[in-house]
Every structure is written in structure tokens, then in C-alpha cells.
Length: 251
Image (cartoon, rainbow, N blue to C red; front, side, top):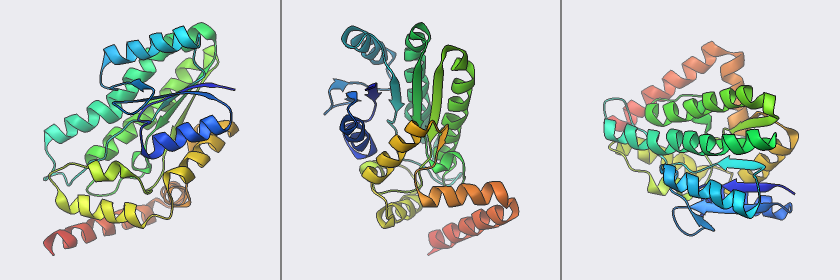
């Protein structure tokens, strides 16, 4: 039985992760801005300090930190604004940074722990129209790898989760200047054969295997395999997607 903290747990993948961990017998602290066990704004150092204090007082430590909270966004380079970049960076990247930094002292002191960061396939595969979102998710991939290397001497592991599109309410809250990209992403999400429960099950299985990179769906595995085994084909695919996006924008 593990002691688990999940961010962004009030809905979508976060809620499914809480249910999956609970089903296997873990003690789970669900956190979110509202509608969870503990209110936690991942952009607030004060909130993270309170979450750490709560965990130490209640459990005496933590086994698994799941940095799941994130927001959808993106747009073509000449369409999205720097304010939109700032918003994505604050939540998708710095929220993970703050959570990790809050619990590194706990993990070092107890000589164990596991950090699981939910990124996206966009952190590994970078389609047109998604520069800001992809940049934050790629940074989370890099942060996770560094975390695993840096903390290995204390018995701490790190894993990053990179799902493709799956059905989630996250995209409904997507804000941005580029309505064309929002429309395309919304359709891809709606048409996905996978829901949050499917992804959560795959994440738990990956954690139990000890995977450092968790690709929880077939589409994510296929796209990453194409990039790593046939780069010319991958580049051609991405550039064709970029042309289709522009054609769609022109109507």
C-alpha cells in the first residue's frame, strides 16, 4: 500500500488516477483547486508547502507524487500570444517544478519515493500549431529525466506519462487566440477511442513495471516509434499535418 498525492484530481485523468490507486489499496490524497480532499493551486508555493505539511502530519511521508494538473492550449506561432505562453508555462511546467521541489526533501529524508509527471505525447512529438503546449510538455519530459538521475542515489524514481489524445474535459476549458487549432484538437479528442479510465489503468501498470517513460496508448507508442526509427518519415508526416492545418485555416 502506497501513500499517493495526485494533483488535478477533481476530474478527467486525475479523478481516474485517484480511483485506480484507491482500487489497488493505496492511501490517496486528491488535490485540486476545488472539489477534492485538499485545495491546491499548483502555481502557489504556499499551497504546496501546506500540502507537504498535511502529508507529513497525516502520513509521516509520501511514496508517490503524481503531478497531473495541467491545462490545454496551443496555437500557431503567429496566432497565440505571449500571455497564453505564460499561462501554460505557469501551470504545465512550473506547477510540476513546484510540486517536485516541495517533496524532494521528504523523499531524500526517507530514502525512497517516486515522482510521476503527466506530460503528453506533445512532449515527444511536436505537431504544427502546438508550439507553446509542446514546449511545456517537452520541458516536463526533461525535468522528469533529470529528477530520476539526480535523486537515484536516494532511492527515488521518476516517470513521465505521455498519452496521445484521449477523451477528457480538459480540452473544453482550452483557451487561446487560434480558434482553428482549438477546433482541430477538439475533434481529435472527441474521436479518440480512449477515455481517462483507460489511460489511468495503463499509467498504474507502467508504474508497477517501473517504466520511466509511460506511453499509455497505441497511438502514442506508434507516433514515438515513427520518430525514433524513421525520422524522414516522421518529418514528412509532421509537415503534411502543418499544410493541412493551414489549408483548414484558409477554408
